[in-house]
Length: 161
Image 1: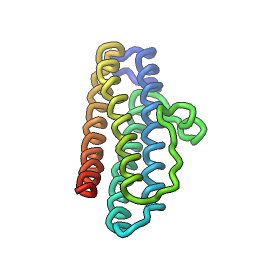
Image 2: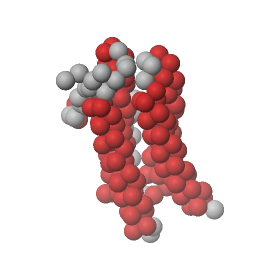
Image 3: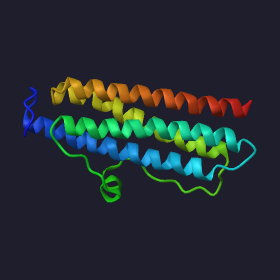
């Protein structure tokens, strides 16, 4: 049954398409964070292993909430790696170093990219698609990424002292 929530069908579809790109970005970031968690090496291994695990858990909740938002506006989220790779704004960097500094800097860069993308979508959702709910939703996502980026940034500063 089609939702009757005060947003036109075309606007709901446009928002769902944009949210699908966000879902792809979130999933790629999740996998990058999993990579850091699985492959971290060095004398700070255990501390960073636990730190990355906490970020993975936060990202898992984010991914679920984006998919649920897509469903709540009457569409189905993409759920294949192929679709994520075709929709994402992100690129992968293969690194041969598995120390915390390199991994944290790469994750921070990805979070900051997502923050910029989300910030751009806030007004688009509210003004162009008249979907204040989705605009508010991605504002919350942006704030979550800002917090996670702060934690990553704090680890870099701590290590550079």
